[in-house]
Image (cartoon, rainbow, N blue to C red; front, side, top):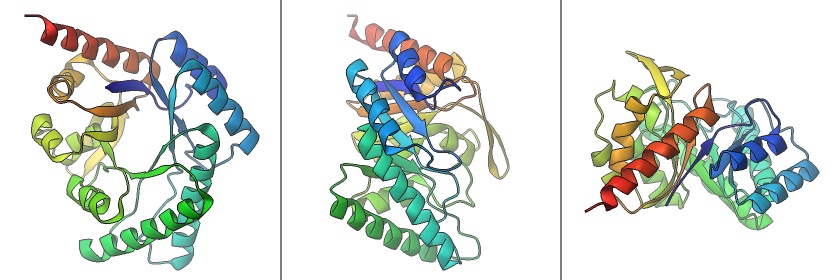
Length: 262
């Protein structure tokens, strides 16, 4: 099962966003706390109740100001708080997956960075467990090699901490400078995972910005996805996420129907 929907509410507010997702017959929506967790618990419960009534699966993107491998201890403390605040709202929303960019190497080795991020994730998971929140941390594949977040690093984190992962296929496209084999990547991944996609502009250092998603750009990923039995939430992060999510769902449905034909 592959559920497809947009990132954010398209400026409508989350309640209207969910109604739009339902009207467009999309399956999910990512609630974005881009610049901070400002949603009240009451508002989160109201949004979650509507999503449940409309059968829309919600996920959460934690704020971008996160670095679990910072050289400054207070920044790690603040990053953990932002993730925990996101987890608390996710619980009220009825959302399971909490997505975040884990951190940067800066002057540290990959091994040192990994150790710091692993430690922080285990500490956050302990708090999640103590609070009995039914959420899953999903560190995201990042779009630049200078950032922590390769597929290999995240799969190792998943194995050693039990966290989830968010595979941003557009970020991977930028990391690999367009030389990407989706089928090969999917073979490495678990059957169940969270994912992002969009068009992407990139340069020698990786991701520059997200772009609108063309059908031509999505089709190779769609073709690879339908070849495997997957349980995936696929969020479109383009500048027009509702329109592009609808296109992605249409393309995927067409490919699935074609595969079933004798």
